[in-house]
Image 1 (spheres, rainbow, N blue to C red):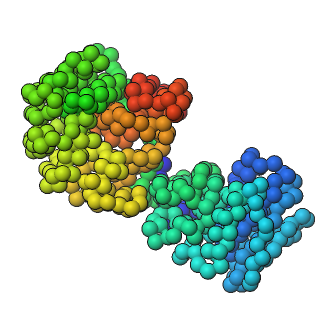
Image 2 (cartoon, rainbow, N blue to C red):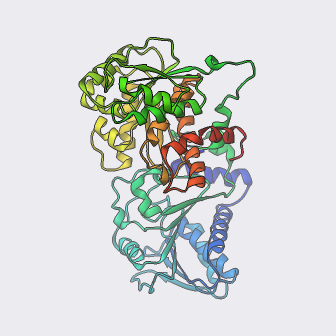
Length: 507
């Protein structure tokens, strides 16, 4: 699914009207109907709903919703239309006339001073002040209105966007001055700002409503931002064929584990096997041999000459991919071995956890990363590598720059894990749940991505498939164990079933 900027969506709206031979207000009515249906599914006709409408088309949407709710028997609808400049958009003006023409409309047009209605926790506010058409941050009286809504305790539903939030970048916005929604109802396509953690406080739950926008125009509209979903992933997966053997599905070498952290090696290796790698070899500390061989007997083990940690990352056999990092520690000898690996690795490479921490201690190693190396940092590891960042928006901008500069793929882990390609394309993942915020989940992800590289998938696809499968396996595991009871091992256990589900297109 594409994530298209506000200007692009405006052009799609125009193209939809032209292709379907409808007027802009017809499309507004369609959007308003979708919002009204959603509200009716959530609230009874006895619910008090206070509608705050602005002077533009977002306000027109809100006025149309109010009219439709009244027509469906909602008798406690109060509407405030803010027209402080004396100029409404054409469609907003038309919707105000349609609203005033029906019986039962409690309608107030605010042209100067605003006498706000009393609001409480039992009330619903429908926010239609400003949507994507906003050109500047909220100012003056509208800031006061936003803060009044936020402080009221009412349940807030925002149409398109919470008023004051922009669809893309918001580093210049004081979120205290933005309407804080409990539910944001957007139309058909998500906005980039939905995927930044700091905006959750103003977005609340968000839901996309289908209003039959022109698919041809959506397809033709360029963007660098996408959402990964099952229908995109399924065609990328290769079904297993008869008359194949383990070597047809690749050999993966994983440098993982040290004394006290051998579990990371176990989790990574098990996930690689459960994701389809034909052969998996772990190279770890000598002391980890019995642990890994006992916990994952299907894995081969290369013991390092050192008892407690890895000192050698030489590749002794032919492998289709190499991963390094889970539980290896940051000892000087380990960092030296990693540096040698970066200089000599002949195959696709995945780096996670302590491999990234070693590089953070020796930033010059960034220039040694082979092209299309996949790194999988969480936000702490990312900031150690590339400097501190205050927001996820800043972090994504930095990831775009670093992926391009070093020609690498960055899997920036989080609620919406972002796969950042060196070309500037970003793919946000929507599978996964808070139960996956547990020790070892990242080691499992490394194993999954490594498995797809071993099976011959190119690094861009392996990263996207890996994060989607990882999240879906976590969702399936949460259904079985609950989010509080979820462990990294559970995610690994459900990986094969997650892949089967994708292949069966039964999402």
